[in-house]
Length: 294
Image (cartoon, rainbow, N blue to C red; front, side):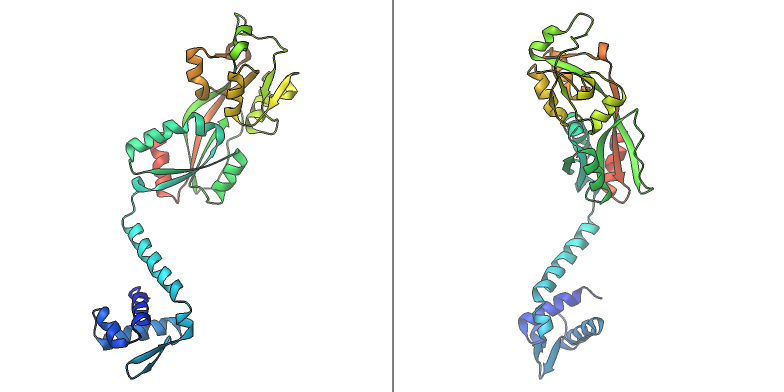
């Protein structure tokens, strides 16, 4: 089908006259009539009745006029979008866990905006299972997540590419008045309250597998709060309510200033990979993966 036929039909609906419609389309009346007949042949149904240069549009045509107008506009926009496509002027949708959105995404975004000033992002934030589901449903072009190095790497099909941005660590921290309970050897009393992860959360499972103290109710006798959100744990720990485990990159500024104290020297730390996945069908997503991997 010649896409000009849609505009021909719309002008004909406005003029209800073949000669005037042809003048508006800058073609002769016979040529315009041939284009209308060609559209009818493609459609497989007549759209007008012809009577001495006066036409009557079929009810099927007039009842779908608005949809034809909308289709003509969408096709023009699509043609422009495809012809002028640039990865640097795209919106990339990323399904991302809560924790890396706060801890590492600002650095990712800064690097991307430096290389591609016209790039925009749309974040779809959730737990890991939700993020993976969105990515697999093609609701997002990229996936940003933490992966415990002790856990098995996620497996996707050949249409997905993986890259690593950096390595992070889950570390135990205390803040507020609890800082003064930390001994010189970086230990803290065993009965200190804990801000823990649910056992079925991703971080909760990774810490339980590593047998980390203060990580869950199973590993601590005094869990005063349980949440799957690292940002919530960081805030509660900062108020001195208990020991909590958070990604180092999320707490490094407070550790540098001394408002938080790390207990990693005595309680250990759990290494994490900051992993990125991109659908190979997304040119912009793959471009971002290449940039961040480098």
